[in-house]
Image (cartoon, rainbow, N blue to C red):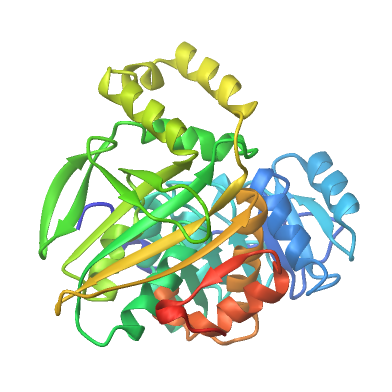
Length: 383
């Protein structure tokens, strides 16, 4: 299936010589966040450091940034230098959380091949497919791998599983609306990912068959909970729309990017239809767009996920969670997914989050970690 490349060459643990990631820091049982001083990585660390004091280590090629960020976070958080391009896992660590996009599977393979638990917050289907291809490597070495662990993918998977399990009739189709506020502060990596997929062609599963589509060429309206105005969702290349069709056995799954307010979403779609995607492919104009979008637009910082299911009997069922600040919410969610792995509630092997996580349990924890979030369960049920 498109976006899920399996590399058989990844199935063997690396035989590179072992080495410590830093000369002056022990990593015994550490939770290492690769890229942990980035926009989202910092939020993951802020959530995890109080829960695992003295265990969280920020790692990357800039040790000064890593140490300064760790000092600001506190709770025994530390910073080290680590270059994943070397393909060597941090010796002594118990868990690695990858907060960077890397198309080289050697580092993930070395982690799982040496019994180190591994999570990847990437939204790139190629990267997640390579991680999924390491399932047997992880299983043989007693390591736990978890992918689809942020907002989208991540929360989308959990709510999709919850809706599917709550349905009293078979689910014929799922629509996943990813809500992002135009007024929010999005990190450079998130903006780069959006620009890279601005008018991309990709595959979806419709009526059990693959269909090629193009981003933003189709749209769908969605009613949001409360007194909010309806959202305007456009087709977008979120990878879980392909994996969920397989893991949950749903004939049709579609992902829709709904920028809030709807006027911002319509403007983006008009730009795509007018050929604006060409600007995202030119290095100079793309750099200018990145600078412009990094400043944020006027509007809401609300974010979240709405999942709607259409059932075989003609009925519908849905669930949603709406909060504020996408980076913060992604950090909280990633920390909660990581705790499931660290506290051994996930079996060895590499799993999508909807295959390994109890939705209600995770949502209960999310409610405690983010009390301002608005959660709507299927049928209006309460936790």
